[in-house]
Length: 338
Image (tube, rainbow, N blue to C red; front, side, top):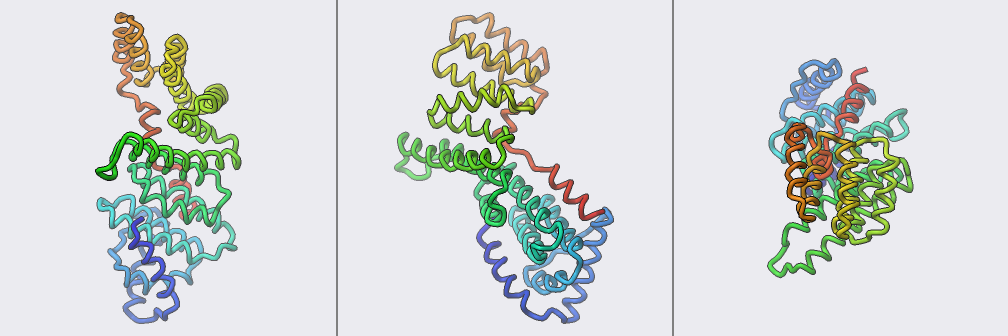
C-alpha cells in the first residue's frame, strides 16, 4: 500500500472520535449497510464510490454494528480491491478494509483469527503481481500483530526474495557494477533467509519455507546447507510441486558443479514427479547438449512436446509468481456469509 493510504489510516483514527450523526452521514451509512447485507447474502453488492471524507463519516456508525457485519464490510472492500483495474483504487479499498477491521476489539471471539487470515491473504494480492514493496506495509503490520505466525513470516520471506530477483536484474543507479549488484542481491536474500528460518522455527512442517531457504542458499553460494535443505524437501515434502522444485534446484547445483550424471538423474526424477512440466525437460536437454549427446538433447525436447508439457503450469513459474491466496479469501467470505 502506498504511503498516502498509511496517512489515511492515521487520519481515520482521529475522525473516529468525531460525532457522525448528520443526516448525510446517516443516509450514506444506510446505503453502505444495504451493500454489506447484500454481500452477506451473496447477492450483487454494488458498493458506491466513497471518498475518504465520506468513509470517515460513516466508519463510527459501522463500529456499532455486530462484529460479523464489520468483518463483512472488510471483505466487501477487499473484493472491491481485487476487482479494481487501477492500483490507487485497490490501495484505497484495502485501506478502507483495514480501517474497518480495526473497529473490532481484539478480545471479541474469533476477531483475532479473522484479522490474522486477512493479513495472510492481502499481501498475496501484491505478491501475485510481483509488487513486494506494496505488500511490505501489510506484512509489517500483520507481523506486529501476530509475530509468531509462520505463514506471515513465509510471505515476508517471499517478498524479500522477489525484491532480490528484481534487484539482481536491474541497476538502481549509473554506478551499478557487478560487485554492487551481487552485494545488493545478498542483502535481500539475507532478509529472506531470516524470515524462512523463523518460519521453520515456528512450523517445521512448512516445506515451502525449507524449499525456498534451500533456493536462497543456492543463490548465496552456500551449497552445503542448500543441498541439506533441498534433500529433506525432496524426500519428505507431501506436495508434489515442492518435491519437483527440490529436484530441479538440486539439478542446478549439480550442473554448476559439472556433475552432469547426477544432474541428469535429478532432472529425470523431476520428470517423473511432474510429467507435464517443461523445466525438467529443458534441463535434461541442456545436460545432454553440454555432454555432447545431441540425440538425447533433441529427444528431451521432443518428449516435452509429445507430452503436451507446455499446457501445464510449471511449479517453477508459480514459484516466481506467487499465487493469490484464494483458499483463505474463500474461507473468510464463507465466514461472513454464515
